[in-house]
Image (cartoon, rainbow, N blue to C red; front, side):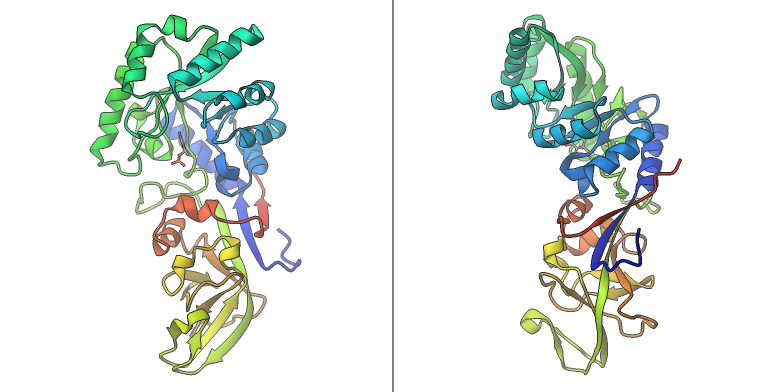
Length: 367
Ligand SMILES: *Cc1c(COP(=O)(O)O)cnc(C)c1O
């Protein structure tokens, strides 16, 4: 960090915390391997630096969603195994192969296409195969699973399956019946298929215990500090802190209004801090008049609407603020979950909504 340089807003990414969170997954899921889910620019935290920090902690396998994310990661991590969750649409097959990306095949049509590609390049091609156990989003549905199980030798010709995988719908809720149901379906599927390593658990799944770990777990949000199961004490460390600079402090009298639409009206003499973070930085406008930021470790309500470049905080009674101060929108005082709740969304969206206007700062990866 360079605190002397003027900066309107910043996202501080604690690479050491990401590494600690990765190691926590290793302890919880071991002996299963731990991959790193780095889709959507590593949940807004920055693909290349996050991948490098994970590699330093021992990670050699990553998941991205898009082909383009895989191509970018391949440049940063030449030796890693990179799974592409989107699959292998016919027009992506040449780029998948030339960038040594491993698709997660999501249908029998994709399995057939990948097998044909293997025959065309005259070499076996690696793939993961996704079995749908209840998300109904991606992966082979039950009918396709039966067909594959019936003649997998033929259908998998030229394909080296390096991972059977499925994805949990309710891993954030340890009490959800859906978890055990999906676990049962996944085990049944694996018993029908040729043997290969298996992967089932996202961050929530890691917290569900070793039954869910299989051979490799796929944490995302936990690495970035999400309190996945809303525990009293978050087992994951805060890894991302969003701050905006106080541009101006002002006093308004009772009855004066704040911001567009004059939606906040002061009930008493009020001190306001105008902060350089708005929806063009990726703040959710839903937090207007609802959310909080923190200044000097103290919580201050957001007064009025979020505008494009600014938000206004009610800092009445908070001493010592100046135009050098920064307000935290999430981090050590305001959790990602609190920020998400105020916006009626999830921690994931709070992170992935941050736009390129917010500079990312990296705090050292330390062992
Ligand atoms: C995004 C994703 C993950 C990571 O989930 P988290 O809840 O962020 O840990 C794992 N597996 C799949 C298939 C995903 O799409």
